[in-house]
Image (cartoon, rainbow, N blue to C red; front, side, top):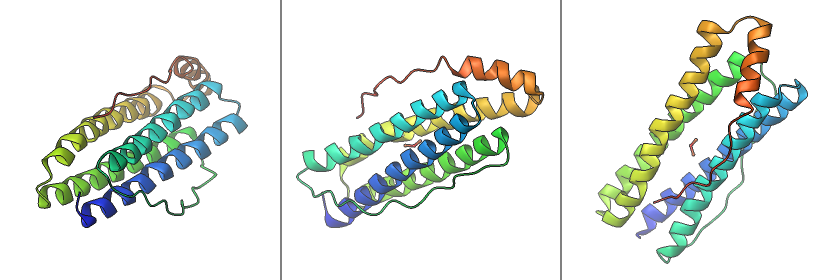
Length: 168
Ligand code: FEO
């Protein structure tokens, strides 16, 4: 891959690791709140982000490129409510979608068809991620404003499990 595309992949690897770090911080927030289902949901989300980062890490190597790791920003540690956490997740996933779109633009500019095809998986994954988070947020905002409901919903989110994605 060309130099510009390699740099763009490295930037995205950093963004995926930041996502992992952000969800790890949210995982810690829910652990402190003793909401084990929500913390499980974040644990799964965190592992997915790790898989996204490693998918690109492996791909850059597969293409004979160089992975250059950079500093990961410090994520926030506190939120005002469960709803605020998921509002931030949705905002963050929309930002990630725009970053993947920008990365796709660089691959298209380079006319790198292999990279375009590889990145297709990530674009589809973003549609799924935004939909998942929107659904949680919808339940929290429209149905679930009483503490008892948060408790019930917490039990439901405890069922989410991590399935290693097959990327590419
Ligand atoms: Fe790797 Fe949630 O985007």
